[in-house]
Image (cartoon, rainbow, N blue to C red; front, side, top):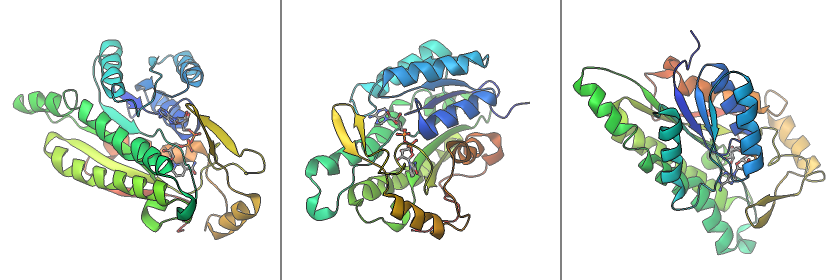
Length: 274
Ligand SMILES: NC(=O)c1ccc[n+]([C@@H]2O[C@H](COP(=O)([O-])OP(=O)(O)OC[C@H]3O[C@@H](n4cnc5c(N)ncnc54)[C@H](O)[C@@H]3O)[C@@H](O)[C@H]2O)c1
């Protein structure tokens, strides 16, 4: 049997990059998926591609940072797919500067997307995860549900130029560990995966990709080629990772293979320590 047969999963920020690879892998393993992205076109396109695999996929475009969004995300999931088993808080981006040049806007943008949005989405999932489990427990059933949060090695080791991002991603580690304690009694496993350098538009060569549009903002992304080459030489596996390789540990933490693991941080970085 496929690892996620009959499960329903939400993956935020899954129109491209790592989120798309996670959604595609989940679908291959039998899950129905909700595809969220700020940009509606890649969200719809990903959902379409997944439906072609013979699996249910629903797009729910919108910004995870909008206050009303978590409720809409839950309503769409329940209306279209009937329940919620797995939640992956993946949506995110970087907006780097050294501290003396960093604005309050940059600071709060990272806190909003990497800490406040996952907090609100998990809170909005309460009826479908915690309360649903309560009913099952009364009937003597133990059904595991899973939350996987996505962070960065910057949250563990720090990274120059990312005081906003590393702090917000560290907050997500705190959210993970607290929720593992609050919801453990309801068989909800809450874990977090920290990536090193995975090949997506966020980490491309700066000489090739230097700006992306995030809503109405144009933000600087990418790593200069020289720094990228240096980083590669520091990675014990001597290469950056693919989105598909990034998706593997998330599948593990979303599947029954990890039913006795909760509150853990799993580093997926080819061995890189910053
Ligand atoms: N690529 C890496 O090396 C790396 C390393 C560490 C952590 N991460 C984390 O992995 C996650 C995925 O990043 P990626 O590398 O796949 O980047 P990506 O840019 O390829 O994909 C991220 C997706 O999130 C979406 N998104 C951004 N803001 C959003 C919002 N407000 N609401 C909904 N969707 C939004 C984007 O539109 C995009 O499609 C992020 O949380 C990122 O911080 C990535």
